[in-house]
Image 1: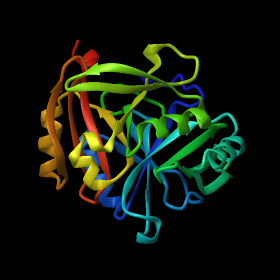
Image 2: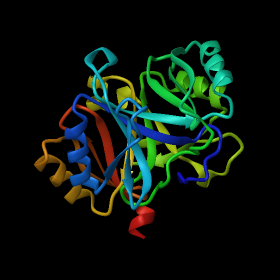
Image 3: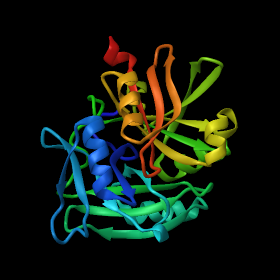
Image 4: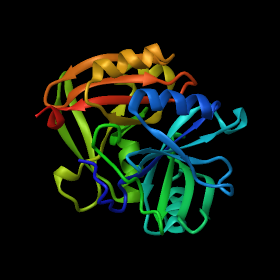
Length: 263
């Protein structure tokens, strides 16, 4: 389970780059009740989505040259420079080298062997997200990749991730947890693109899951607000009821009412 007790290699930040920040603010406020707070005049328009003053994500305006609107997942690193070097050694790419972020921490943007973008965050004053797993916050991340063994080997080399197989309707699901941690510290999964025609058509990427109190009502609200349903609300035994969505500007995300929340 993802918590704010962040350890190296676990997701500790999430943000969206969008072609219309004001529109995205309005969409996610109506969908999840998120309030947006600017990070200040020196932050280039970057700001924080919050619930009751606790940060659940960041947000920024991006240009077409920076790529299409998307959600970006960041993983904790004790040393951003070393992690960036490990990515290069594992045949990944450094898209944005490690940099200090106003004394709050160090970040870098990277890509794995399949070209999937992800970030790292080395905490300083800002440790990470202020809320996780509660409704309205990040609870799980999922990598869609063309080569599961290659992806598992890459992230093991970079972060020391451990994988395990879990029974899943129609097959087996590959779960991920930080190095040396217990099974309850699992925070995500790896899915072969070939196993999901919807995702295969859109290419490899990291998908963040937001916990919700009612999956069906969130799906209906997203459609009302101009979002798109990529996978309708679906029950997954022992996991929860999930749906995959796109906001009005093209950023992909998922929502789930987890089994533990239902219980």
